[in-house]
Length: 530
Image (cartoon, rainbow, N blue to C red):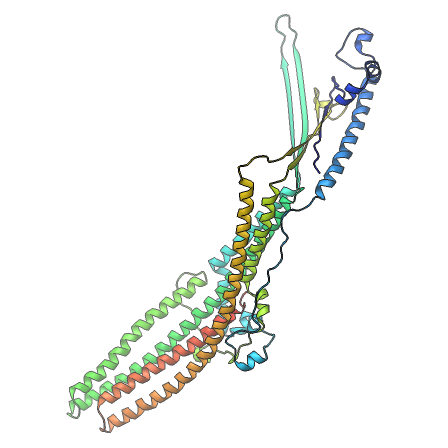
């Protein structure tokens, strides 16, 4: 339904114009009777009405304005109840697996409904010092603060978009006073003028363009909020991973320092035997190689430790500095088995999936905004006020004025711009749908990768423990054989090197197991719950 309404009338202290329709349909005599006798009938002055004329005119305009106002409200009620163009959002069907790949046969047969991702991050990472580092990072990290600022931006944008659904009202007032002195035969005169008006404009959302735009802005707000939660989850995982890497470097440094001390003792023994002619200088040089190798690795490990501390300081929003330590790497608590939960619950738990869905909702609403441009745009304006030649009588007497108008604009020729706008919105919606599906598949893959990594890293760490114990026993035996003179120092060199490498490999295996735990916790959607 299309409504076009245009009514205009005005009155002041000395002028009255009857409505055009009544002027066209009323006979001249009845018109004169309705308006009363003119000044020409009483003496020839056409400039003023009598007091009775003013009363009749005021009553006539009041009834006319009431009828116009009633018709306006009825039209507005019809407009507001108009349709909303564009498709309503429906969540697409997701081909989710029944179980995660990477689980054991027992876990696949009986999947646990609970998930590690449902736990709070301080329940998963129980090192008190690590918890303090995470809390500091969540408060001071710049990525977190930037994400929070983007949420505020989205809130403000939603307010700006939603305001388009309502009318805007402005007020204005003017006043002037002028006095000229007498000039020759022209006497002095004084002129006063006052005007107060209120302007209201409303572009009716009959086709739902503004409502769809508000829907899109609200979805973008939720998307920015989920993006902030994703930043929080990523930060928790990054701080935990960096902390475990720092503790692994500390362990490597302790292993290397212990090996250096032992090798220095072996070097002194070899030098003593060489001085007494029992061994050759070759044994001394081989012992020196072990010492120099360990000393060089200490310098490299200390460099890596300081750089890792700088990384953690940056994650916490601090300048580079030392980082306090907590539990040793070998004592970090972690469960041997991790409950993965049901794949269907992952869609509701992971912030990146929720963010992708909200972006898809926003793109879907933009289709309605683009389609609404095909239809007429209807606007209403009103400007009531007062005008008087005397400021003291501005709000009294017949000084009221008002203007009410409606307009309608229908696109006729746009050279395909509107059609292209709809196609653009539909293509963007299809893009967000594909991104949503891609994010879900990536999430399932991330969980499966983390599950198999955690299980296989545990198996690898167990084998590394056996290797380290075997290498340690071989190094001890070769040392005893060398002291008893039954073997050369080359055997000692080989077994010491193997034992040192096995210890470092075991430290790395312990780190990989903890990093896999962090990875699976993040993949299951944990870390953002506060």
